[in-house]
Image (tube, rainbow, N blue to C red):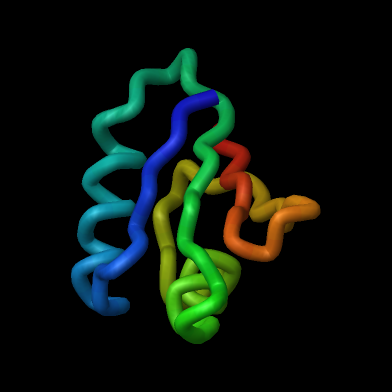
Length: 76
């Protein structure tokens, strides 16, 4: 599992960063831990978990974790 931290990004920039990061991962990477935070609002959390906003074709499933500030993206 690899991780990426998108704290402090605005939604548009975070989407572009995540899409580029997902594309850059080779096929051996099956999970990405996205650290988006939640204390300063839920915009990034909702963006990561919404299939209509983050639309990479490599994303198989979005899994919330016990930590509200993180989401795991399962990849094909």
